Amino acid sequence: MLPITRPWLPGLDEYVELLKDVWQSRMLSNFGKYARLFEAKSRQYLGNPQALAVANADIGLVLSLAALRLPEGSECLVPAFTFNSTINAVLWNRLRPVFVDMDSGTFNVDLEDVARHLGPRTSVIVATHVFGSPLELDRLLALAASHDLPAVFDAAHAFGSEYRGRKIGDPSLGDFQVFSFSGTKLVTSAEGGLICPGKAEYVDAIERLRGYGFLNDYVSHHVGLNGKMSELHAALATLTLDRVEAAVAHRHDLADLYRRLLAPCDAIAFQQHLPGTRTTYKDFAILCPRDRDGLADRLGRLDIQTKKYFRPLHQMPAFEAFRRPDDDLADTEAVSERILCLPMFNELEQADVERVCRAILDFYGAG
Image 1 (cartoon, one colour):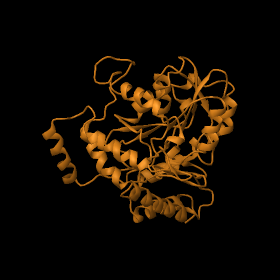
Image 2: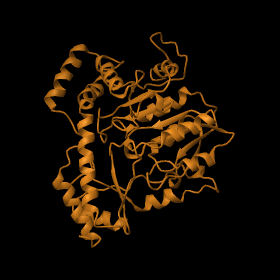
Image 3: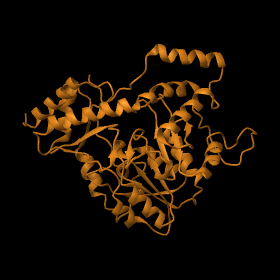
Image 4: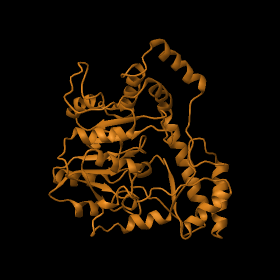
C-alpha cells in the first residue's frame, strides 16, 4: 500500500544517542534539556523569541484561547473547513463557535464572510492555514484590529510556511499561532506542539497555563493543565526540525510533478496559493471533476491510499447544533464533496507520483 503520509524519521542510532542522554539525566519531562533545545531551535528558525513547547497542538490552541481570558459564551469565528481540533479548542474554552465559509480557491477562510459574521458578541477570530498554505494575513489582521479583536491561528500544518518574507510563527502574524509536530507533519516529535505568542505579555500566562497554572512554587494563579512536552518527544523534534527546509523543497518538487502530470485532465483543480507565500504541502489535494468517491475506491483497489479531507465541521454530530439558519456554507460543502488528498510525504518518490497520476488519468479517460 502506498500510504497517504509517512513520518520522516532520523536514523534510529541518532535518536538512541539522545535517549541515552535522557536516561542518564533521569529528566523525562518538566521542560528539560531537549524541550529547551527544541524551543531554542524553533525560535531561531521562526524569528519568534517567545515560542513555547507544549504536549500537542490541541493543548496549544486550548491554552492560547485561555490566555486571552475571553468572556464565557462569547462568539468565536471559526472556519467550517478545518480540522476538528480547531473547534474543540473553542468549545473547551466555553466559547460559542460561529461558522465561516471558505474561499474555494485557496481553501482558507473567506474574509468577506468573516466580515459579515462580526458582531457585538464576537470576542476572537480563529483561522487555519489549510494544508500549510498561508491565508491573506494582512487583511485578516487589519479586520481584527479594526474591531479590537485578537486573532488566533491554527498553524498545525504550517511549520515552514512563509508569508511575504516572514515565517508563519513570526510574532507580527497573529496573537497566537500554534503548530503541530504529530506524526503526519513535516517536522515531527511523534506528538508535540508549539505556541507562538505575538506579544511578550502573553508568555507568562502560557508558561503557567501549560504547567498546572503555576511556576515553580505550586501556587496556581491560573486554572492550568499539564501541557508539558516530554523529553522523549522533544529529543526527536530536535533531530527532525533541522530538516524542515529539505522537506519543504522536496514537497514542492512533488507538487509540481503532480500538477504537470495531471494537466491533461482539464477539470481537475488544485489549491491556489497567494502571491508572496510559501506552503508546506502538508497535504496535496485535488478537486475532482466528477465521482470523487469512485476515484478514491479505484485508487484504493490499486493500493493507493487517499483521504477525503477536511470534512465540514457543521455537518458533524458534535458541532451541527452551532450552525445558524442563515449561514451560507455553500463553498465549504461544494469543496468537501470534491476534494481528495493524494499521497504526500518526505520520502515519496517521483515514480510513486507517476503511478498515482496514471491511475487518475486512466479513471477519467484523460491519459
